[in-house]
Image (cartoon, rainbow, N blue to C red; front, side, top):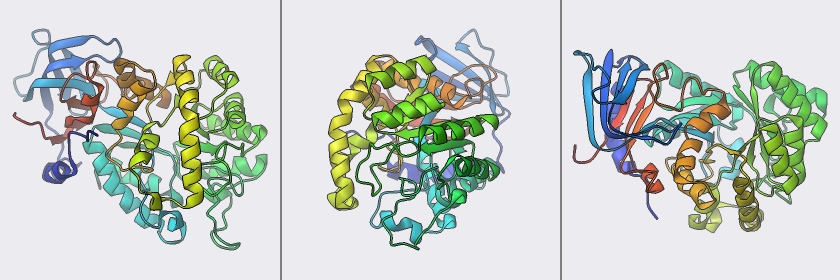
Length: 437
């Protein structure tokens, strides 16, 4: 199996550069990047001998050499090989979480402060493998909100983070069920556990009050939790609808975790903006998604990675669900993608090692997308799903200067997306580990 081009050893070497790339060390006023190829993700056009001019944190100009004026004072960075792309976007991460011994008891062993520090480590790895924006779907104690603010202030390095704080779950659901005895880790609406419309609305308001920028609702049971099945519907449709309506009143989008068909259909009807996993989607669910314009974030690489995960990483009950769901979901997810539902990339990193997020591009092609469509899913399409399509996801004047260079042509070889050698976020270069330059 191939690994990302920027190895963990390479990441360690890059930290000297990274420490200089903070808000206390602003980028040069003007930077010009010259590349052998630039893939315009919106059209699929490949521009040879491309030049992109960056002014502070924004793209000033982009086009073929000779059509773009490079200011005399610009710092010039040359890439005589490789492909220039917009910064990558991951729509489903868990930065404050890792699968490691004892992880299932983390809620009684790890404080929110420790989770945020764990997230800082994982955020740095994620950024250095090319992901300049991520949507983080769940964290205890508002740890991901704190992490997002720390990145924004330049205290730590990481991608731009859209946090959801606590996931919303009914009592005993995948956001609540820890397998502990009564009285241990009892949760309420402040921690996202709510029963009934009134409590569900209060849970939404509380997460948003304390910094959530997206709401995640657990429409069905989960795999990495102690319910008997992963597919059973959890919240009622009326509860999900109340959650969606309240979030939308605040201008916040809703991501619905959903494996089973009943919960999938209920979440779509209720107004969820994106469907996470969509493992056992029915024909009716596919038709609903297309009718409503709901995004699918299929999180394929996590299932792929399970092949390399030691059995003692999960309790036996969870392994049983992982194996059964892993087999069943292939047919259903391929059918949904073939039907033309809107797809955005989400890796579910955290359920497998951070820094391997790039595997999702390849997995999307294994499930039916073309290489170009897979690249689009992790750039322009993901930006659309987040409602940030006028800020990120393409290389265009006025957009944030988020840029990556990969070793190879991803349209010819999608595994090139795992070989990221240059990362710029908001005009700041975070790594330039390109070989042979």
